[in-house]
Length: 241
Image (cartoon, rainbow, N blue to C red; front, side, top):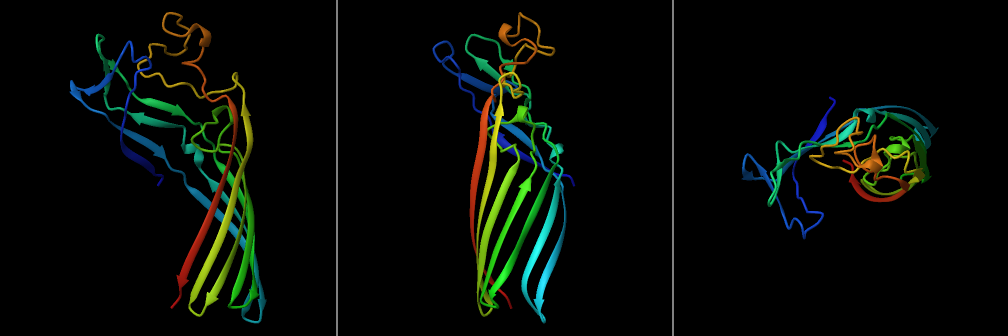
């Protein structure tokens, strides 16, 4: 701990103008290659909670539980694609080094607050469940993107269990919503990826940088409004012995 996901992936390149450059060849050390590696940091999760049980003798009739999760998403500063020395070759031009491709994230630690419980409608036959939660935003709006929801999350869930002797059939439905997050062009901080660009920090060289975007590496590409909704349906069959 902590851990990373490291993938073995491939990279493909398509020319922006196929009339001027019909194809791009990827090479490494003069030989055709397209393998890259992607590193995704994983967080640590700390969880604490309290639970109250409503009993009738030794039998549990209902319970209510409140949990707080703390997740160290601040480990994710960026997503990095390492090309391990790949070069892009266009006919009539010298090969260009692709270098590493870095997508800024600047995620931050999150808190999640969860409240739920269940009720034995028919003891040992039917139990109903419900819950709700709120999770703080993992990303500043300036770094919103289309790959992962970065804003605050709201969620609710319903469930039930039906018991048949040692068997339990458990059903659950969860709704997860990210309310709309808006990013203006001036505040956006996710930039178009331009491998091999000669425009380097502080990005004020008018010979190599676009005059319309001085002070930044390339055009910002994440301005807009973001919202997200997901649905989860689960069916489980359990056997106890």
